[in-house]
Length: 599
Ligand code: PEP
Ligand code: MG
Image 1 (cartoon, rainbow, N blue to C red):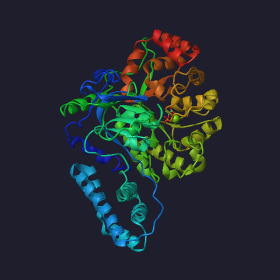
Image 2 (image 1 turned 90 degrees about the horizontal axis):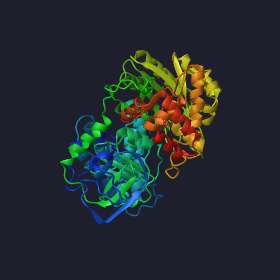
Image 3 (image 1 turned 120 degrees about the horizontal axis):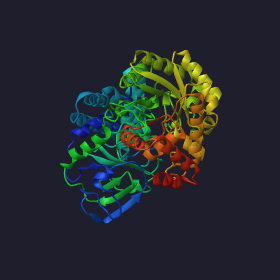
Image 4 (image 1 turned 180 degrees about the horizontal axis):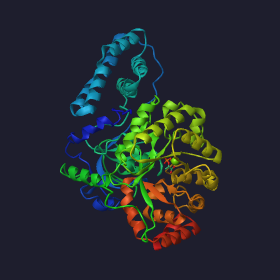
């Protein structure tokens, strides 16, 4: 499995050891604990708001509050066109200086780390200092190439060599590309791209964040995330919730906040208060970490299986994308997003690598059920190794199961790896395909999966066509799992990445509830389970509505399980059905919510 060490992955481990400069120490808490931050209230610990305080609004997508200094993320900018080299010696020294600074920076960061992360950074520092690389840069400059292009070509040549080496070496090629971008930015005097590593906890501000960047963030270092783009059910938002990092998307103007400015972020209300006093002192940090740990390391064993007040069972599963999302005592995993294991990978994961990754996750749920989803690539989840063509409308293009039309061998490899891991595991493995649109696709997927010996085969219902024809799909399948994030997007024709359309993407939209009801009814008639694994399942009141609509299981991030469990335990199945009835009949999401909260 590839781990990017320059993007806050292994490198981010440094946070636990880093000493934040006085006045730059961040603080994190739940909304309940430290109060809501807004125009008129400062979060305790933030000190008084200054006269210069202002508030930015966005869409809160991951609850909790944090106070800390902003550090902005910059994306690599395109290389300027090549230019003639007037002074070869000066050009050479500029390139050498950039590489030397890079190597020194890596070595200094490695000093602050231990274990594997330290070794990786030391290895990268050695690559940067490698005389072969330096010689190659000098040779290219001597041949008339300017410093930025000489660096780019030399680093790319090294990365190609690593890729040819395959296996672990190939995985480090992406790190070399990060090194390249950093060296080129240094020589051009541009801000260094990538997830920043200022050496102290900070609030990460970015125009947008790719899921691969978010997955590698270190929650000890990144106090909160604020982006200018992104939507409530975007994968970045989902990953931030899984990591327990408060997050706000669609906060217009956020990237205009200067680095070092102290902000208070409220991931519940979606507000960023700019210019607050720094958090009180470093003694708050252990408390802050403990608070976050309490939220992200819940032990679910005490809760027991999900059920309504009158004992109707509703399995409550976890949505997982890596071992970080696993919690003890869970009833099982209702959605294992396999693409999260391989985001950004340029080389295909081998069957053996996939087998090992899946087996580790399966074994984290002994005796329970794990629903593993085949790769859902495309749109905002790029898997470069699939080499998918660029598309005008990626969300409507070759994504999910459709990628198997272009690369059937990738699906077969994955099914083989899932089947072998399932055989070795001590849990019950169910497999499902994302983005199934037609009964023919369902039949084809089921035949392929069963040919590999997989016994429980299902599909996601994420496209209205699949909900409308759920009964036909179930003629070929053993179960369905409703992905309300995509089903909402495609029902309302509203991009889930777009934070400007939260009302249309609201999972309480009665049209979405109608489609869920259709799929659930098809499951009831066929005697087959139909669950929900989209973010809608994590809203306790909506969870009761979904149960009332007839879904048989709910799957969500671990942090949401206790509240959903409590809500269901407080309502009979009949009450859930009444809520569902009212929500379906409502005019709009606001009315659906209001009716459901009255009862
Ligand atoms: C969904 O669409 O609701 C879903 C669970 O899949 P993903 O969020 O990974 O697209
Ligand atoms: Mg989906």
